[in-house]
Each structure stands twice: as C-alpha cells, then as structure tokens.
Length: 257
Image 1 (cartoon, rainbow, N blue to C red):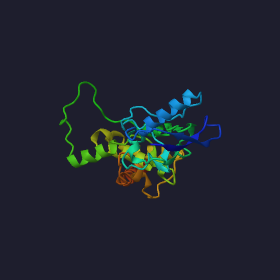
Image 2 (cartoon, one colour):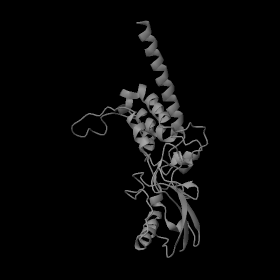
Image 3 (cartoon, rainbow, N blue to C red):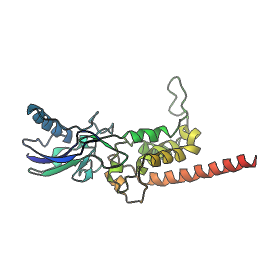
Image 4 (cartoon, one colour):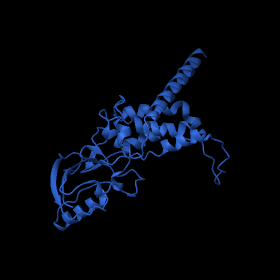
C-alpha cells in the first residue's frame, strides 16, 4: 500500500508550524497507524532528517497518550478506536492523509503532533479526595452498590483522558471529560465526602484552563474512543446545581450566625 502523508511539523510551542508532505510505500494493511508512523520515522532517520514527534505509551487503547486529527477526525475514521488501535486496512492504496495535533487553546502544541494536556490533570486535582480505607483489599460486597449504578460508574470511569472530545468540539469544551470524572465519583459512595464541592471546583478549574462551554453539538461523544455518553454532562449539571444550592445554604447559614 502506498500513502501520501501531510503532517503538521512544528519545532516547539514558540515556532511557527507547517504541513509537510511525505510519501510512504509498502505499508502493510496489518500495521497499526502508529506502526506506520514508526516506519516513516525510520526512513527519515536513515536520511538524517528529524523524525515526526507523536505521543504514545501502551499502544493498547488504554493509556490515552496517543491522539491527533486524521483527515479532520479525532483518532481517525474508525469509531470507538484510538489511533494506536487503528489499522491501515481501513485506508486504501494511494490515499492522501492529513495529520494534525489537537487544536485548542488549552492544549498548546509542544512539537509536531504532541500537545500539552496537563490541563486535564489540574481539573482532576481540583476534584478533591475520595474515601478509601487503607490496609488489605476489602471484600467486593463490603459496600453494597446496585448494579445499574455500578455499571454507570464503570462506563464513566472508562474515560482515558485522551483529549479527542476537546479537539472535536467547535467550542474546545472539556465537558465530556470533566463529566466522566465527576459521574464516576458521584455514582459511588467513595466519592461522597467531596461531592458538595467537586462539581463546582472542577468546573471552575475547567474555565480557568480556557476550555469552552458545551452547546450540545455531540461531536465529543461521536469521536470518543471509549464511547463516553452525553448523559454524563447532564449528570454533571445536576451535581453542579446541587453543589451550588448547598453552597448558598451554607453561606446563608453562616451569615445568619
């Protein structure tokens, strides 16, 4: 298989970037997309040229490290798939591909296809603590949780924080990511100690990081490799309203005292 690759090349966050064209021959349909880029980089290194920088770790669709735009689609054309799990059999001989990093003010480009996603870490840190006993592993049935609630929590916990939702959103919103983290903890008893302030704190940090607001386009759910549902955003809004109401009641009670 022969491919034409147009890849965004940018030396660092301060340098201007541009698209650079490459041609790659003898691409196997059994390769993953990142393996194909490995082959390209081997060719570039053999020519004493700078290899393309892209982020990766597990290459099993678990860590959330990989991710960039392929022909304008976050993680590429295959739904529910990370770039590292996307295989070349989904493309055809002679196809021209355009590879760009996530585009969002909160995700500054570090080099080529790599962006700084540390804003996600700060949103998680703003969520506070959970209640977990130390010592040996507790019995699985020590804290009874109804199956429907446990399933919803596990679905939300599947979020790997790759940033595709932000890249696909026309507002560069992080609401799907933030709602997944809030839903995961709000649905389980271990997340209750901080529930009154978690939604307020995480949303405040999201705004501080310059992510946009959600206007229900649904592009985030469409490109999410773990199929995180929009209903989590509705749950986040409910948690925020409850937290804001509790905060006003506490403030009113404190003023009365």
